[in-house]
Every structure is written in C-alpha cells, then in structure tokens.
Image (cartoon, rainbow, N blue to C red):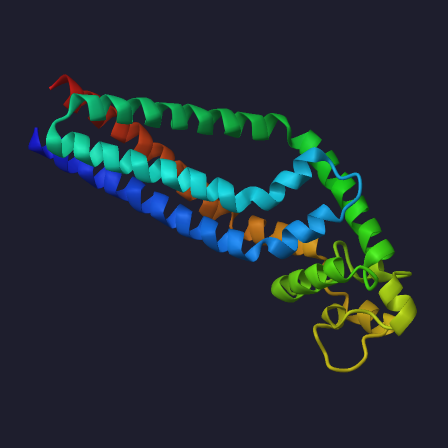
Length: 237
C-alpha cells in the first residue's frame, strides 16, 4: 500500500511541477505578447481563429492551473487516504487525457485546412505591411519589436516592405532586413542579406523543437495513464 502512495506522490509531484512551469511560461508569454497582438489586430479581414493566437499565454496559464490542482488532489488524496479526492483526481485527469487525444486527432484531420488558413494569413499580413508600415505608429512599433526579437524581416521577407509608406518616405528598408547593420538598408542590401521572414522564423523554431515537444507530450500522457491506474488501485484499497 505504501509503495502505491509513494508512486502516486511522485507522479503527482511531476504533474504539479509541470503545472507550475506552464503557469510561469504563460505569464512570461502574456507579458511579451502585446506587440504580437497589435500586429494581429491590424490585419484587416483576418480569420476569427487568428485573433486567438495572441491568447496563448492565457491558455498556458489555464492548463498549468489545472495541472497544479490535479497534482495537489492526487498527493493529498494518497497521503490522507481520501477516496473523494482520489475519485475527483481520476475524473479530472481522465477528462484532460481524453481532451488531449481529441485535440491530437483534430490537428491531424484539419492539417489541410490549417495550411489554407496560414496562406490566407500570409497574404493579409503582407498587405498590412505594405499599406500601413511607416504610417501607422502602433503597427510600425509592433513590427519593429517583433523583427528585433525574432531576428527576421517582414512576414515573408524584405519584399513585404516594397511600396510601403516607410520605404516611400525614407528610401530605405528597416535595419532588421539588413541584420541590423548601422548603414542605410537599401533595396540591394536587403536583397543581398535576404533575412528570413518572421513566419518562416517562427515555423523553423517550432520545427527545431518539435521532437522535444512530442517527447514531452508522450511522457505527460504516459504519466497521466499511470497516475490514473494508481489512483484507482488506491481508491479500491
């Protein structure tokens, strides 16, 4: 019996820590996502789903809070031998596990739709730069901060700024399109440097970390299944 309690506490300690990390990351994302939301808000006729991208921080905070509560219930239920807490823990973790499976299935089924949505976003984001960058102060600041943070140029590349108010008035491109060189960033310089667009930079970041993220997701799912099994055994005993 005591072995099950120890295993239960270990599993739920990991879940509780994961929840704390998710909340911390969510707070950091929320504090640094104001420029991203500003960019998204200035994309005209954008798809409704696009507006939710800026709420990733809130989602992480919510998920982290649920994980922390699950870990607390599991540990207390095991140590206090509370059947009510153990049953509540089992129900919550079962719902979370089923939601994760459903989310994975939806992502797999709607990949073609997601590609179309991303292409639509790509076109509208480029249009917003051409029409407003250098004229709309809020949008210009948001793009500057985004490009500086991600070391990228425009949404697609330097061509997004061609014919924009900024280029027309200053006869130059943003310095980020020339890797931040102090010299004037002309069209030829931007073409030679050919700095990666922010969309491709973000996609590369996700791709580079996809294996790590997949491994973490599989580990969490395995821990959840094991925790449910141990919780049921403790509940019956």
